[in-house]
Amino acid sequence: MNAQSLIDQLLKTGLSSLGQARGAVQGARDNGDLGKYAKGAAAGGVLGMLMGSSGGRRLGGSALKVGSVAALGMLAWKTYNDWKAQQAGLPAAAAPSLASLPALPPPQADAHGRALLKAMIAAAKSDGHVDERERELVETELARSTTDASLRLWMETELRKPLDPADVAAEASTPESAAEIYLASLLVVDQTTPMERAYLDALARELRLAPELKAQLEARIAVGG
Image (cartoon, rainbow, N blue to C red; front, side):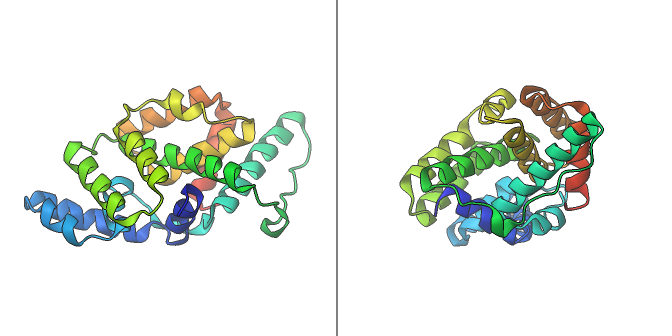
Protein backbone atom coordinates (compact mmCIF):
# COMPACT_ATOMS: atom_id res chain seq x y z
CA MET A 1 0.00 0.00 0.00
CA ASN A 2 1.41 3.39 -1.00
CA ALA A 3 0.74 6.72 0.69
CA GLN A 4 -2.08 7.71 -1.66
CA SER A 5 -3.84 4.37 -1.20
CA LEU A 6 -3.58 4.73 2.56
CA ILE A 7 -5.18 8.18 2.49
CA ASP A 8 -7.90 6.95 0.12
CA GLN A 9 -8.66 4.17 2.58
CA LEU A 10 -8.92 6.65 5.45
CA LEU A 11 -11.12 9.05 3.49
CA LYS A 12 -13.45 6.36 2.15
CA THR A 13 -14.25 5.22 5.66
CA GLY A 14 -14.69 8.81 6.76
CA LEU A 15 -11.98 8.05 9.34
CA SER A 16 -14.87 6.91 11.53
CA SER A 17 -13.32 3.59 12.48
CA LEU A 18 -10.17 5.44 13.44
CA GLY A 19 -12.11 7.79 15.65
CA GLN A 20 -13.80 4.87 17.38
CA ALA A 21 -10.46 3.15 17.82
CA ARG A 22 -9.01 6.28 19.34
CA GLY A 23 -11.70 6.12 22.00
CA ALA A 24 -10.85 2.48 22.69
CA VAL A 25 -7.17 3.30 22.94
CA GLN A 26 -7.91 6.24 25.24
CA GLY A 27 -9.78 3.85 27.51
CA ALA A 28 -6.89 1.39 27.42
CA ARG A 29 -4.47 4.18 28.30
CA ASP A 30 -6.63 5.27 31.22
CA ASN A 31 -6.65 1.68 32.46
CA GLY A 32 -2.89 1.27 32.01
CA ASP A 33 -3.46 -1.47 29.42
CA LEU A 34 -2.07 -0.02 26.18
CA GLY A 35 0.24 -2.98 25.60
CA LYS A 36 -2.66 -5.43 25.65
CA TYR A 37 -4.62 -3.26 23.19
CA ALA A 38 -1.71 -3.03 20.78
CA LYS A 39 -1.32 -6.82 20.56
CA GLY A 40 -4.77 -7.25 19.05
CA ALA A 41 -5.20 -3.99 17.18
CA ALA A 42 -5.65 -3.61 13.45
CA ALA A 43 -3.42 -1.13 11.66
CA GLY A 44 -6.28 1.33 11.36
CA GLY A 45 -7.02 0.98 15.04
CA VAL A 46 -3.54 1.96 16.13
CA LEU A 47 -3.46 4.76 13.58
CA GLY A 48 -6.69 5.85 15.24
CA MET A 49 -4.56 6.99 18.16
CA LEU A 50 -2.90 9.39 15.77
CA MET A 51 -5.79 10.47 13.57
CA GLY A 52 -8.49 10.40 16.23
CA SER A 53 -9.14 12.54 19.25
CA SER A 54 -9.98 11.94 22.89
CA GLY A 55 -11.97 15.16 22.69
CA GLY A 56 -14.41 13.86 20.09
CA ARG A 57 -12.89 15.43 17.00
CA ARG A 58 -15.29 15.20 14.06
CA LEU A 59 -13.63 12.71 11.77
CA GLY A 60 -16.60 11.30 9.93
CA GLY A 61 -18.65 13.83 8.00
CA SER A 62 -16.23 15.93 6.00
CA ALA A 63 -13.76 13.14 5.30
CA LEU A 64 -16.49 10.79 4.14
CA LYS A 65 -17.96 13.44 1.84
CA VAL A 66 -14.53 14.16 0.34
CA GLY A 67 -14.03 10.44 -0.21
CA SER A 68 -10.70 10.25 -2.04
CA VAL A 69 -7.41 11.99 -2.71
CA ALA A 70 -8.67 12.90 -6.20
CA ALA A 71 -11.80 14.51 -4.75
CA LEU A 72 -9.73 16.40 -2.19
CA GLY A 73 -7.56 17.75 -4.99
CA MET A 74 -10.57 18.79 -7.02
CA LEU A 75 -12.08 20.55 -3.98
CA ALA A 76 -8.81 22.43 -3.46
CA TRP A 77 -8.67 23.35 -7.17
CA LYS A 78 -12.27 24.54 -7.15
CA THR A 79 -11.91 26.61 -3.97
CA TYR A 80 -8.66 28.20 -5.09
CA ASN A 81 -9.94 29.09 -8.56
CA ASP A 82 -13.25 30.40 -7.22
CA TRP A 83 -11.28 32.65 -4.86
CA LYS A 84 -9.03 33.80 -7.69
CA ALA A 85 -12.06 34.57 -9.87
CA GLN A 86 -13.60 36.59 -7.05
CA GLN A 87 -10.44 38.68 -6.81
CA ALA A 88 -10.74 39.48 -10.50
CA GLY A 89 -14.51 40.02 -10.42
CA LEU A 90 -15.13 37.01 -12.69
CA PRO A 91 -17.67 34.15 -12.47
CA ALA A 92 -16.72 31.08 -10.47
CA ALA A 93 -14.66 28.49 -12.33
CA ALA A 94 -16.25 25.23 -13.47
CA ALA A 95 -14.52 22.27 -11.83
CA PRO A 96 -13.63 19.23 -13.95
CA SER A 97 -15.31 15.92 -13.15
CA LEU A 98 -13.34 13.30 -11.26
CA ALA A 99 -13.55 11.00 -14.29
CA SER A 100 -11.84 13.59 -16.48
CA LEU A 101 -8.83 14.05 -14.20
CA PRO A 102 -5.70 12.32 -15.55
CA ALA A 103 -4.01 9.84 -13.23
CA LEU A 104 -0.57 10.83 -11.98
CA PRO A 105 2.33 8.50 -12.87
CA PRO A 106 3.17 6.21 -9.90
CA PRO A 107 6.23 8.18 -8.67
CA GLN A 108 4.32 11.47 -8.74
CA ALA A 109 1.25 9.89 -7.18
CA ASP A 110 3.33 8.53 -4.30
CA ALA A 111 5.06 11.89 -3.75
CA HIS A 112 1.68 13.61 -3.80
CA GLY A 113 0.25 11.10 -1.33
CA ARG A 114 3.21 11.50 1.00
CA ALA A 115 2.84 15.29 0.96
CA LEU A 116 -0.79 14.95 2.07
CA LEU A 117 -0.01 12.23 4.60
CA LYS A 118 2.78 14.41 6.03
CA ALA A 119 0.23 17.19 6.45
CA MET A 120 -2.26 14.88 8.17
CA ILE A 121 0.35 13.40 10.52
CA ALA A 122 1.58 16.86 11.50
CA ALA A 123 -1.96 18.12 12.03
CA ALA A 124 -2.75 15.10 14.20
CA LYS A 125 0.28 15.86 16.35
CA SER A 126 -0.65 19.52 16.73
CA ASP A 127 -2.75 18.97 19.86
CA GLY A 128 0.27 17.52 21.66
CA HIS A 129 -1.33 14.16 22.54
CA VAL A 130 1.13 11.88 20.70
CA ASP A 131 3.69 10.80 23.31
CA GLU A 132 6.61 8.41 23.03
CA ARG A 133 4.57 5.37 24.04
CA GLU A 134 1.91 6.09 21.42
CA ARG A 135 4.55 6.56 18.72
CA GLU A 136 6.07 3.21 19.63
CA LEU A 137 2.69 1.50 19.37
CA VAL A 138 1.96 3.03 15.97
CA GLU A 139 5.41 2.05 14.72
CA THR A 140 5.02 -1.50 16.02
CA GLU A 141 1.69 -1.90 14.26
CA LEU A 142 3.04 -0.37 11.05
CA ALA A 143 5.84 -2.91 11.06
CA ARG A 144 3.32 -5.72 11.50
CA SER A 145 0.77 -4.61 8.94
CA THR A 146 2.51 -2.51 6.25
CA THR A 147 4.30 -4.40 3.51
CA ASP A 148 5.83 -1.25 2.01
CA ALA A 149 9.03 -0.92 4.06
CA SER A 150 9.87 2.45 2.52
CA LEU A 151 6.49 3.92 3.47
CA ARG A 152 6.70 2.45 6.96
CA LEU A 153 10.12 3.95 7.65
CA TRP A 154 9.04 7.27 6.19
CA MET A 155 5.96 7.37 8.44
CA GLU A 156 8.04 6.49 11.48
CA THR A 157 10.33 9.41 10.66
CA GLU A 158 7.38 11.77 10.28
CA LEU A 159 5.92 10.62 13.59
CA ARG A 160 9.16 11.47 15.40
CA LYS A 161 9.81 14.83 13.76
CA PRO A 162 9.26 17.99 15.79
CA LEU A 163 6.09 19.76 14.72
CA ASP A 164 7.10 22.22 11.99
CA PRO A 165 4.49 23.89 9.75
CA ALA A 166 7.28 25.17 7.49
CA ASP A 167 8.34 21.59 6.76
CA VAL A 168 4.77 20.69 5.79
CA ALA A 169 4.36 23.81 3.67
CA ALA A 170 7.58 23.08 1.79
CA GLU A 171 5.73 20.23 0.04
CA ALA A 172 3.51 22.72 -1.81
CA SER A 173 4.73 23.38 -5.35
CA THR A 174 1.75 25.43 -6.59
CA PRO A 175 -0.98 27.58 -5.02
CA GLU A 176 -3.45 24.76 -5.68
CA SER A 177 -1.27 22.22 -3.88
CA ALA A 178 -0.94 24.65 -0.96
CA ALA A 179 -4.73 24.75 -0.76
CA GLU A 180 -4.87 20.94 -0.90
CA ILE A 181 -2.33 20.55 1.91
CA TYR A 182 -4.36 22.93 4.05
CA LEU A 183 -7.57 21.01 3.29
CA ALA A 184 -5.91 17.71 4.24
CA SER A 185 -4.84 19.27 7.54
CA LEU A 186 -8.34 20.55 8.21
CA LEU A 187 -9.73 17.02 7.94
CA VAL A 188 -7.72 15.96 10.99
CA VAL A 189 -7.78 18.90 13.41
CA ASP A 190 -10.35 20.30 15.79
CA GLN A 191 -10.36 24.00 14.92
CA THR A 192 -11.89 24.93 18.27
CA THR A 193 -8.86 23.95 20.39
CA PRO A 194 -6.21 26.65 20.90
CA MET A 195 -3.17 24.48 20.05
CA GLU A 196 -4.64 23.13 16.83
CA ARG A 197 -6.01 26.54 15.81
CA ALA A 198 -2.56 28.05 16.36
CA TYR A 199 -0.99 25.30 14.23
CA LEU A 200 -3.46 25.89 11.39
CA ASP A 201 -2.81 29.62 11.46
CA ALA A 202 0.95 29.03 11.36
CA LEU A 203 0.57 26.53 8.50
CA ALA A 204 -1.56 28.97 6.52
CA ARG A 205 1.12 31.62 6.91
CA GLU A 206 3.83 29.23 5.74
CA LEU A 207 1.66 28.22 2.77
CA ARG A 208 1.12 31.92 2.02
CA LEU A 209 -2.64 31.51 1.87
CA ALA A 210 -4.57 34.76 1.60
CA PRO A 211 -6.92 35.22 4.59
CA GLU A 212 -9.98 35.10 2.34
CA LEU A 213 -8.83 31.87 0.68
CA LYS A 214 -8.02 30.34 4.08
CA ALA A 215 -11.52 31.18 5.30
CA GLN A 216 -13.11 29.69 2.18
CA LEU A 217 -11.15 26.45 2.53
CA GLU A 218 -12.26 26.16 6.16
CA ALA A 219 -15.86 26.82 5.15
CA ARG A 220 -15.72 24.12 2.44
CA ILE A 221 -14.47 21.52 4.90
CA ALA A 222 -17.03 22.57 7.51
CA VAL A 223 -19.85 21.64 5.12
CA GLY A 224 -18.05 18.62 3.67
CA GLY A 225 -17.30 20.22 0.29
